[in-house]
Image 1 (cartoon, one colour):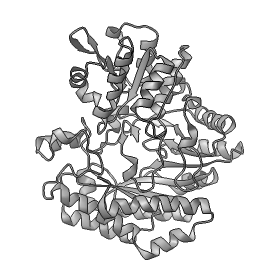
Image 2 (cartoon, helix red, strand yellow):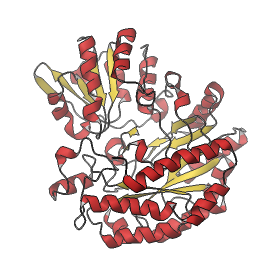
Image 3 (cartoon, helix red, strand yellow):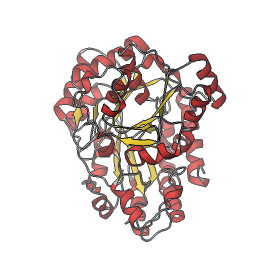
Image 4 (tube, rainbow, N blue to C red):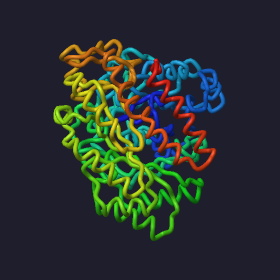
Length: 458
């Protein structure tokens, strides 16, 4: 998953679908509006290798290569820059990714084949590059000028998301990205950017700011219709840190979907404290079938320390609310922040053993550069920074003040086992199977689950 705020390997996610590179699709749409011919390739999902990439360079002969990177994979990703320069030294190579918000100059110094990096939201910076604006005048980039590396001022966040063109889905292989249950193509639609919360481990405020910037309902609905009519999508996921936060906006969008007769099936993320019956009723009527919640911990002490501003007692309340409306609930937990203890973990274990949630996910805390957690973990020597690249949310990298990284890794598996290996839970999920396609999907994710809880993915 290569969203800047969510950099997670899919083979460690129990119930998460693969996501298309929507950042590249959005960049490509901006470039196409400027008259540029683009091509997007998702080599991992297409099971292609570096030889295939080299062949594409020869075939397409690009003037510019843009690479979407993550912190765990940045060193491997930037091999693409080296290969591009080998094929044609005149190719401009650009990289984007949250890692460059902190380590932009270091990366450019290390990778001579890289011409510039984009910090923060990429679309307007790419537009300026395409229009021929001198690098020195483009906000939000760091670039190489001879032997000097220059870091321009940050670019303000784009306040008008409706002005951006819809992502260039025609450049994606949409049949690669399927729902976890029905194995049908799924489209991801960004409805807002920004998050006003201050969770210590999350990069959302870094990459999209602390102000919620909403697209208008008409724009989102028009994109939904285009996806249905032009591409045949019926399954959607709304990309937003908190899709449900603005009640009037949510209800208006759902009413439009219902009134226009758009028969779709969709999911979204929410906070524990931003749902009520009116919102949920309209969401169900409009086709919502699953909602993801950042539960994070069943220890109130841990929730308070991570600045979550939610209450444990409200987690099961919102799960029950979803159950009443026939909507699946997906709880996400994080293990291993500095204050984690054996007791706080046991509180989470006890909670997941009794929760009626549909699915859970458990991540190890990973110090994304620039987050409060990264700063705190670095100051307290809770991880080896040399191991940051190459590690991820499933890798025992960080220790807490009282538990080492191996103990936290075992705790992650313990929480997963406590939830998924309950006979009653397994029976309830099997009872929901209505087709061989769904049965096969469950088998695929069951194998991934076993891999996670018994011996891990590494």
